[in-house]
Image (cartoon, rainbow, N blue to C red; front, side):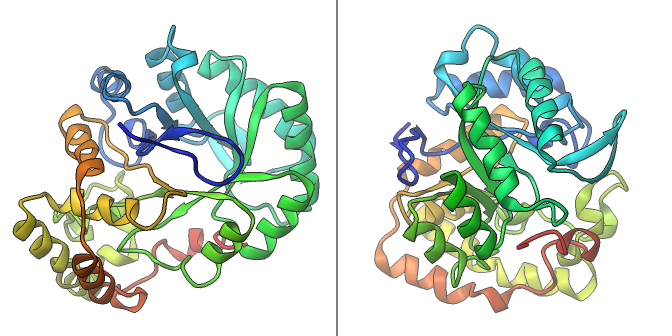
Length: 327
């Protein structure tokens, strides 16, 4: 597996990471045994960048990752996230107050069974706490050795700039794919000007780019996609048609649609690291093969032109969630 140094923070990761959220929530029933086998297989194949969060489960995903990587901590890069208030396992409001961040980092370290977190992301921007205070607190945790790098997730350009002035932001994590290109006009130039790497989650468009997406009503209530506007009604029909170009390209190149979608992201810059999520080894192997896919300029132009931002119908999250992005 090739390696990348996204941004200028000196952080080295595998060219593909593994998003672990779906192992504990959102997409079907968890299977810890297969998930642990998937994490360990990823490491065997040279994929050593793992993404989790306190909110995944909640808490269960960090514990799962800690168990899977026990005894191999020095071989991996672990990213997790803070920023929510909890009553037991019930998630409440956003909370990025300095004292809360300090409590959370110790809890995360315990669940992950480690003495340091490689990347500590603010999961969503908390408008009640100045970003300068958040950045300053994480900067103190870096000085103490509990955290190695500061990251932001789904932050707006202005917030990124302000945070970076206080504590260097190593990585921005946000949704980015052929399916979701909202960051290209403003966010990408801002982070590239500052040497901030990009971690792209949902690189497969939640199944639209792979051809596995179903209409919202065919998912169980526990599945996030049942409530995703892009899976509902006429949006689903329009989006399935829009995504068909990926399948056409994949067929011509004897690749899978997933491999084409991931390869497109890898071709967008050495500062971009996709983190496709899976909880099964068979899907992991398919995704990892994308690092060997070469797309020429003609194919890249065909994909770019076929799926501009306006080609996708519906917002990428329900309004109850969407308002927390881009702050």
